[in-house]
Length: 281
Image 1 (spheres, rainbow, N blue to C red):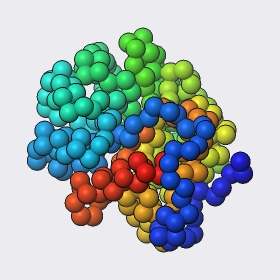
Image 2 (image 1 turned 45 degrees about the vertical axis):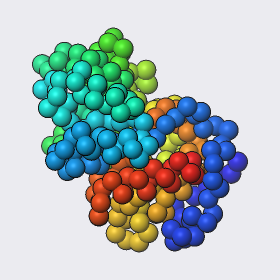
Image 3 (image 1 turned 180 degrees about the vertical axis):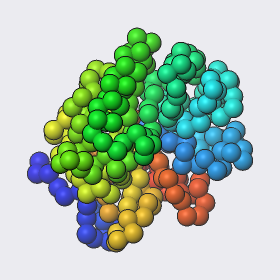
C-alpha cells in the first residue's frame, strides 16, 4: 500500500468524511484497548482522584498510564491501594511516567511491580541535560542501565519524546542518536505522535528505519494552521488511520490518549477522542 502523507491540508470536517470506519487493517494489533495518560486530567485528579477514575471508566477507557508516581506511591496512595482502585473499575494500570535519582531505583521498581505496571517511561529531559550530543550519549547509557534493571525485574523501560529531540545538534538528530545508542531489548520508545509531527518529521519514516522500537504511542491531534494547537483526536490534521495501519511495523503494543492542554471540560474532551478512536481505528 502506498504511504500516505500523514498531515492533511484539508479541514477537520473533510478529513472525517474521508475516514473509513472500523478496524479493517490487517497489520493492526488485535487485542488493543484504548488507553488514557492520566496527565491529561491532572487538574481533575488533583480535586478528586476516585471520582475522576470512575468517570474515565464510564467513558470506556480500559488502560491507564500514570503520571503521579512519587516516593513509592501513586497519587499519594500505596501501590496496592491504587491498583485496587483501578482494578475495581475494570481498568488496568499499564504504564507509568516517572523520574528518579539513582539511589531510588529499588523503591521505584518495587512500587511499580506492586502496582502491576508493565511499562516504566522516562517522560522528560531537562534543558540542562540536553545541550550537546554528549549529553544524549550519557542519557543513552543511563537508559540502557535502567532498562537492564527493569528487564531483570520483569518490567520494560522506555523514553517519551517531545519536539526538541528532532532538532539537529551539529547536524545530528538527538532522537536518532538515542535510538542508535540504546539497546532495543532494553529501551523502547513511547512515541508522542503529536510532537514528532509538530517538529516536522514523519513517524512512518521512523517506523521503516527503526521497526519494532515504538511499543507505546501517545495520541492527540493538531489543529490546522500556524498555531498547531493540541485538540481532540479526530478533530485535526493528523491522519491517524494511515499511522495505525503501520502499527505492527512500529512494534506498537499499547496506545494512550494524551492531551497536554484542553480548552473546556476535560472529561468531554477525552470522551470525544475515545469515540473517534473506537469508531474509526
